[in-house]
Image (cartoon, rainbow, N blue to C red; front, side, top):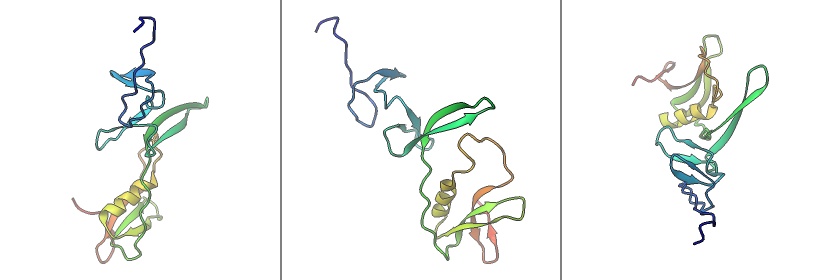
Length: 147
């Protein structure tokens, strides 16, 4: 090997793209596309921008119109509602607008429906007096489940 010849190394991302690495992050050689990634908060899995579960979010920050971009896992799709389901994606508010958004057969489906609402927006760290939550029908009213 000629010492003036560039060293080429394949991307070491878990997606297995096999492209030529152009950068290194924490000692892992990555190609340009795989250098953009997020980490699944539940599993700790590194998920690169090539994965269809990932999306880039760009937010406007401040009066000058500055932008901030980052990668995150897409919110899940909302499951099909079940008209008679005992679980619900419920909009809870301090005002008069509290209501069932969708009913579901299982608590897991209701939780997925809440996550699919993707509210508040990813970069919105405001503490609201309202929000989506899982509720269960107790025979008389929609109540928050006790854990």
